[in-house]
Length: 256
Image (cartoon, rainbow, N blue to C red; front, side):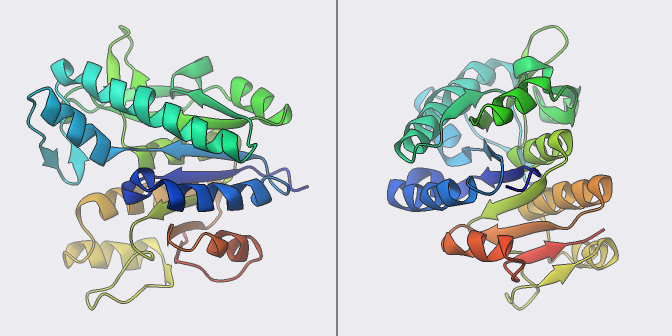
């Protein structure tokens, strides 16, 4: 067994499609026979639905949700409650021994406030003790993208940045799963490999923006920290994950 943990970030439409989620988690069960496995999830669509039910309006800035403090009980309820519980339930069906967690569990992460977005934290790796103990015992940690500030206030965390922090914490391999096959060029074609210089050019040209830029920033930061390539890939073909672990080209490979 390879001792380098595999960190998978899940989000987008995948989290609202049980058949697709189950297919992906079945592949995760195969992968877990070879690698310690950590799952990190977002849940933006579910958060939008919950906020609307409570009469709140959703705004975004540069691909990230503006999260006023008064909305955080609803956001945390959706992410750390409903979505995380659902992920744990579906993962249990595949005998993954999932454990639902927030990013604050065991002081796994610390958080820098991003005041311009409201009650939003930028996760940074802090203490890997809990995570390593869970992995050593054969559990699959399932992190929701919720943390807390120094005064105990709930914080929303971008799930891609959360996955990057968790990956750095365990010195793992990071795969950011998305609704598209990877990072696309100006003609909508898949970019097989991307370094920081090329990425900066695409951002300047306005080709990479919004949520994909956040994803790219997370990948580049992790690639730099770990000196290891990061993959951004679609979730629609779960077998691609097995191919990726066999060193075959899948999605967009981010290198520092």
